[in-house]
Length: 197
Image 1: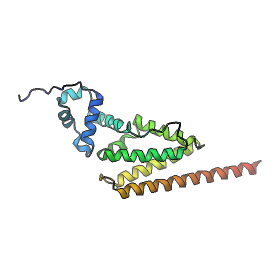
Image 2 (image 1 turned 120 degrees about the vertical axis):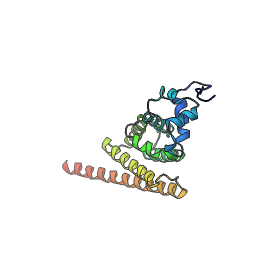
Image 3 (image 1 turned 90 degrees about the vertical axis):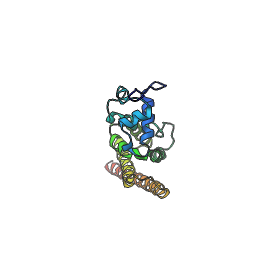
Image 4 (image 1 turned 90 degrees about the horizontal axis):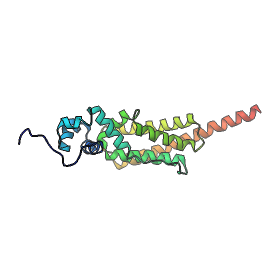
């Protein structure tokens, strides 16, 4: 019957909403609207608004859902540099599964609780390698900028194998250079301290 409200078989909750939103936004973020999501969930737009107050809140929930799938770096990881490399490559692979969400993830990552959790894990891994907090910040920032720049350079297209290989090589070069720079600075500081004695 026309105009009759849609009725779901199961209860609507945040997890169900985010899963449906991820499905819609997987390739193009513009396909994710409150109307398209309501249609996907077989509910009225009004019912959806009872759970999500706006498209902006929906996008934040979607970003959290994506980043929740990111590889974790536990404290048992032996080499913090390798753990950081694995995390960055893992996030790249994750974003390859959701190419339509690059912009949303980049825009919201500064305030995302999940992104902050990933940053804290990365920083802790680097500090286990005897980096100071300031050094760990600089390393993490440099690696993040490489990652963000590589995503922006794609201009919305899917990564090809050459892009994947080039990014991994660039990441390895950056990490090797950062390690050398930090070791050089530490050696210089050690020499200064020795000379002062």
